[in-house]
Image (cartoon, rainbow, N blue to C red; front, side, top):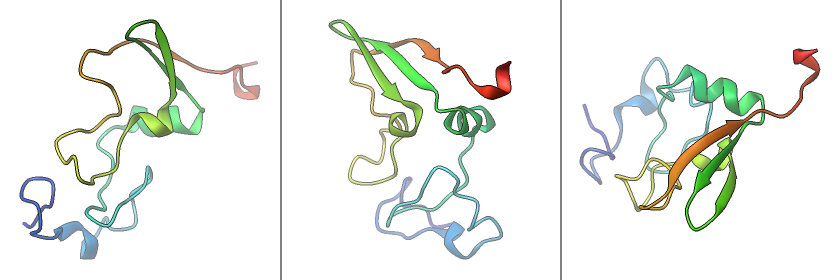
Length: 97
């Protein structure tokens, strides 16, 4: 099946497939696919923040942590090469009372 991530410019079979409307965390001109992680979708719904370590701590909302397929097709996240996730922070929620 055609896949722009595996082979750029070939198109993507998912656009006309059964799951074409399930791209919860977004889609790009190059790809529309179901996110493979149930946990990341839940974390996005809960406004989670990824805390990473690289020359100090950096906080990145989970919705900015994952990248859409684009010009850097082998990079799925916005982490830097020397960055390490040290925590995931969930804000206080009415659901957690």
